[in-house]
Length: 595
Image (cartoon, rainbow, N blue to C red):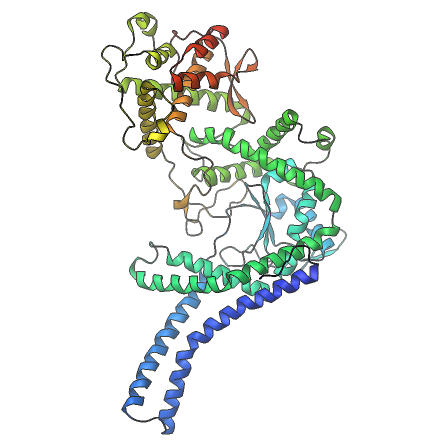
């Protein structure tokens, strides 16, 4: 059984970490001993021949066989050792913050390290996530510029410890915009405290060994790099995985000991404020998740990326706090200095993090272009919401055309000027197909799942299948080409290094599962209704910080539209939707403008 590290003291946690680090290093020593064993046997046999004791045909054959085996094993072990030592470990894509662009933030971290009596991190980077951690980037490809052992910390002449081997402090960007300065310091205290155990040579060596093994496994699985040496790569992967299994438990316990020691060391720093700060961490995560899935994702699908996501999370969390009353004393808290004031140019940093978020969560290009441009929040309703509605409405009518759905005689005069909502309603509610229409689809289209179309009428299922197929084709043809980008992107600048970051795996963290056919149909009909409302009744597109694109009617958000559309899709009952249209003065027979 592994020892319990929760609640242990600083020294006990550090001792546990060092003991486990030595166990990891013993795995490395045993592997070296096994690799040298055939060579030792070959030396014994050769020495016996030179001394005249082990002679004869049998001993000669054994000498040649063991010597050949020893050479092969040494060659293989040397190759594995070179790959483990030189393979580039995976690093998190981040936006690196230079010290001259955030001197106050670096000063806060250095003062925190001084209070904790640990080395200061070698650099600071931001990630579009609600988390903070230390990341070792001592590999030459990842290491920050070298620093002197002792440097002046401030005008008072105090010195702080900052070494090139110290890990990089990665901070979740939403924390900087949402948290106050004191809260950020309290949240970072246990993270910065982890630089102390990281400086221990045994722990550092054990971590390098584990990271090297992990990188070697990745190299062995890279067909593009080792196409001509598949057997060698298979052997490399087998050895690396064997060693990883041998030290996995010890490495996990080592990290738990480091975390326990760091948490215990940070207890004396802003302990009371840390409780409040942890509440803000949970609130930030909730607001960030809703902002990405409901606000940023529709823009990314349109080829636009919001350039101020971190500023948007403040608006989203403010609205969340106002609606659900999650943050007590909210008004007084906003009067304190926000942590983003520690940056010299928060707007440029926010833009760089927003572009990185689009790459990580959606797989967008590394730089702006004609089909991938930034959008400001004040432009979002017109540039994203309205365009999304009209694009979906146009796709809906193209699907009706493909199904052979014609205009009814009663609506031909009104429908002559363009597509109408009435055409959609008639198709989904008529008991028989319109004259000249093709028969409705019986069952799912190729590639469609029966379960995805369950809960819809037969005419709705046919339209949903057609829409899903067309949408899949559009997404496949318009998938953003993965550009080259390094894992560290300087603020306001996209770097290029495809070797460090394999873009073929993008998006790394997809936000949502693929939509079902029924959801696709519901979204398209809702978009058509919104277009009709905007063109015939003066309704306007808007941005809801928590729910994404929304429709404003007389200044009020139309929150009751979705259940009425579902009634039409699932039961073929248009009455709730028609009543809603009549109540708001929306004319379904009037043509609407499409893209």
